[in-house]
Image (cartoon, rainbow, N blue to C red; front, side, top):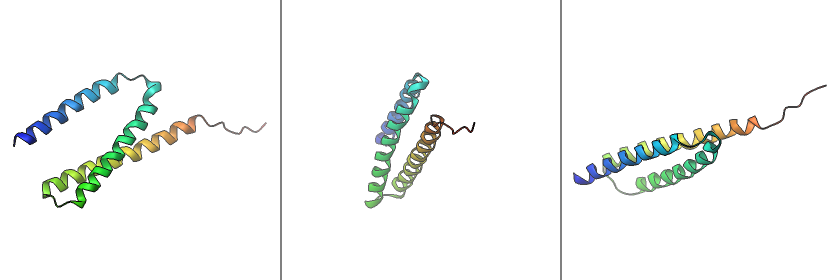
Length: 96
């Protein structure tokens, strides 16, 4: 029971610290920061997939599934936003 409380406390603290840090990042640095969170999410996806290869309890499977879904959403969303941002820098062919 104490392990769950410790993990939830650690999650809450890391959430709050991450929120404060990301909210103070200048706008021009959001794209590199997003690339880093995509890399972290990819590691989360690998960890969740490894969790599914082991014999686990139903609660662990549900938590792994939630982590996998959130991390996949973050990775896909990061690629979509990065693609849109790169599109802003493309020059359009103008006809004279």
